[in-house]
Length: 392
Image (tube, rainbow, N blue to C red):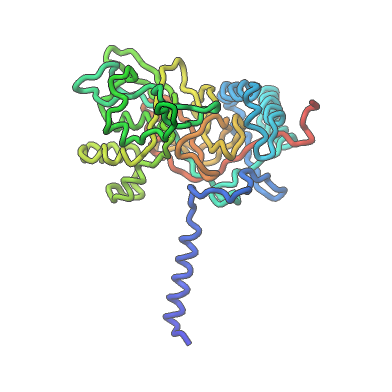
């Protein structure tokens, strides 16, 4: 018979193991064939949509972008997904717009949505709706130049001609003669200088962390020495897997696990300039840019809207769809979500049902918020009830 102390120790260890196993793993893939969207049952808590009715004017631009994209003939190739047909996706967006613009009060708006729409919860990190990790991204405003100088030494490149893309924009690799091979990693691109002096440099940045931030966000506005603003949007990437700089710094014990933010990474880089490039090279992914007018575009090739566009894993979730996010953006700079967002983008790190990335706009404040956002919440999708679908 075991002693009481041994029994208590075993129980404590079992409890500790259970707690560890219950820790969310947001990078966990759903089991093959498992649904990414779970319809709310009669007893499940339904979000209260009334609060966002007062901000309905903010919703309309992003909503119109999703409607326009869903009406394109090329959108049909992405449906059905999660049992949602193209017809249902478009009808849901158009009906939501009608309800949003014709309701006389928040209460009427909410009750009409409850009557006509089915609400689905993201399967989340555990496949059972356990939660989503929200991060945020932005368009930073960075100091730079269109010519290389002693100060501005880190280039942002245009899409190289030897990078092959498929019809959906997927990266096929590097063209080498008549063959195709994986495109080189960040480390090889940087070390070899393979893109230098090929008229691909769009801008030069002084700070390597600033250049890296442009890569992570997929866009940047560059403030030039003469005061002009050069706007750069996403053009493509090398097709390699994204790896987090923050995680690399934690793993190497350069930063504490609970102390990683964009501000702490910048501070670390200033204190450790000799280590910066080595840690940047741990991320194989490399992004290419193109000049743009207006706001950056997401993966649907429609403009993303601050606090109204969201990036998810497009292998799992319907493109352009109406979502509702519950959680928090930022820390001391941020605010509660509790708002409608349109699913209009994807990202290198957003590869499971347990991840979502909210676009928070342009500039320094947006960068602070994006750099401080890593919060668990819930993500919901809204589609018209099958019986409420209009006739073909």
